[in-house]
Length: 107
Image (cartoon, rainbow, N blue to C red; front, side, top):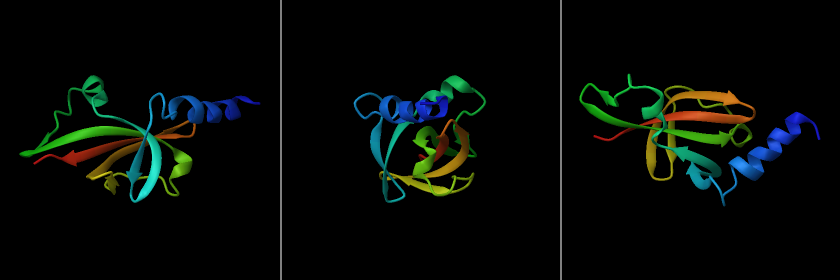
């Protein structure tokens, strides 16, 4: 097994293991195993206070296998995750995984 194959195996058996980190989410009407982190952005940057001209927002990061998406999500795209409606703020890709930053309007 080469390094690339080992990374793909680790994604499925460790990072996206539902007994460890991951859960099943309904993303745009498709069940996807992912990890949702909702407090990571506070640690990364204090410049994003979550307030946009009187609208309170919440940011979350959704880590998913890139192969689960036929098209890479883009900034401004609407994405439904479970019962929430989000706007894609950014989507980074590394080693077969997408890290999708989502914004949800709170009020």
